[in-house]
Amino acid sequence: MGRPPPCAIQPWILLLLFMGAWAGLTRAQGSKILEGRECIPHSQPWQAALFQGERLICGGVLVGDRWVLTAAHCKKQKYSVRLGDHSLQSRDQPEQEIQVAQSIQHPCYNNSNPEDHSHDIMLIRLQNSANLGDKVKPVQLANLCPKVGQKCIISGWGTVTSPQENFPNTLNCAEVKIYSQNKCERAYPGKITEGMVCAGSSNGADTCQGDSGGPLVCDGMLQGITSWGSDPCGKPEKPGVYTKICRYTTWIKKTMDNRD
Amino acid sequence: MDPLLEANATFALNLLKTLGEDSSRNVLFSPISVSSALAMVFMGAKGTTASQMAQALSLDKCSGKGGRDVHQGFQSLLTETNKTGTQYVLRTANRLFGEKTFDILASFKDSCRKFYEAEMEELDFKGATEQSRQHINAWVAKKTEDKITELLSSGSVNSNTPLVLVNAIYFKGNWEKQFNKEDTQEMPFNVTKDVVKPVQMMFQKSTFKMTYVEEISTNILLLPYVGNELNMIIMLPDEHIELSMVEKEITYKKFIEWTRLDKMEEEEVEVFLPKFKLEENYDMKDVLCRLGMTDAFEEGMADFSGIASKEGLFLSKVIHKSFVEVNEEGTEAAAATAANIGFRCMVPYFCANHPFLFFIQHSRTSGIVFCGRFSSP
Image 1 (cartoon, rainbow over the protein chains, first blue to last red):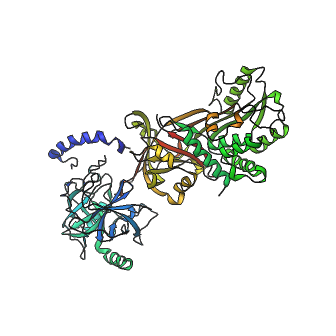
Image 2: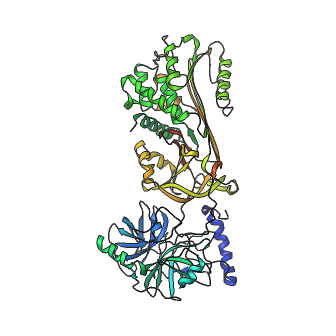
Image 3: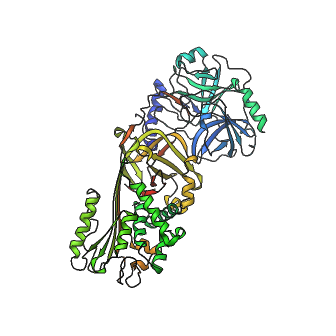
């Protein structure tokens, strides 16, 4: 087990200072999401964070004033949603924390087999409506599927290095491109379904642990939900895998309409 | 709900709060063991002595048919917990030693054997004090396979000792999922905000039952022992939460609520757990007095006419010693995560690098075999 304990995170912060300098030369390791950087604060106003007590579980995406979309594998018995957040440790003005009223996993999601990554999508109904504004805003669902090569933004509070974990305090963003389904299939033979889309970058930009449930946004439209990928993260030939929103738009809208 | 189990658990938590008042000290005791030993003495108690003992042991709600239900309940509980053929090592030494000149009633001796799997032994404390002490220590050592020696220290009994209750218990269990010894490494343990000590920290990443209780800002992890006969329940508060707050909040009802299996989620967890041996020795007299059991320890006040018809019998000592070893050993190697793909959620980690409570619970009966607090390596 090469993974150092997360509670000994301090020593790795020191290492990161050197890695940060080194990365500028060789890009051998990520620096300030992998190969990302701090997002411009509140530039992703749909970004949500799922919390169990004070523990970050996953990301999420605001899709309605009382609806958050996330990954099905992020479901917990009791948890809450934070909206309008940028720095997890300081309470910003637009920040809202709302309890989860109901978690609705996609009916085809396989809850009992963690090896099955299919239909990894879930709607969360909030206990009360979010106060919408510039910094808390639902994202539009894609009505068309993403195009190969299309540039997209991924975001989250997940680790910015892998396999060693280092969790940022602020929301991180990175740019990735949509891979073709064939390229995706070659990267993960036999594991890719029509409900998945791959996105990656030649520089290793990628989602990682803690980013699940977060958005893959292309031209302002939600195209993917962070789901799974290689371990360690950040291998250009092993892109991140996202739940393909365009395949689930009907289910999402029907579910939201039925329960509003 | 079994009233005896409730009584035992309530007593356990009361004892935890009392024994654990000094938050810098580790705590370890066996609730089933202490309860049953005292209940044995309770069999021979009468009048106010009996009612005080019932209260201290939380047995007041169990009374029916003159307490007969209590003793049959213990008989079943002990039979279940101590049965042979289990895959854990549990060695108990449970005996009442009485001054021989008191002429212990044969009926009381029979009841001890019948309900509590324990013997009542008569010794010559008056005429051969030191030999009596050595005899008790030798017996305890033998019963615990030399795990517990020198239970009674020099000078701890004298010629006016009429009754000594001895209770010692040693436990060693293998995990259902073993830890890999190669992953054990030295890590800092935050005894307090300002005091840090090194500890050998075990590690494994496996699927376990875990839950978070917001009321006390505490993660609860369930680690099964081999065959799931026993479980270790670990209560670890968030880093900035004082464990003493958790101890204050805990009651029997809350303990049951917080540890309900259907409320615990099975999930992959990175577990960091100190490797430790805890060994604690308690003279229970002060603690039991504070729980209301006072007459039993006072000559002239105690009424143990159910033990001996001769007057003047009182409890001099109640000694409880327990020993628990926690290490990497188990039967099932944690499935070497050959998986090089996975979901990208936060893999929760359960990092016991600051004080925590632990309970070793018997799965079938839900009885608490051990209860403790790890405050400091």
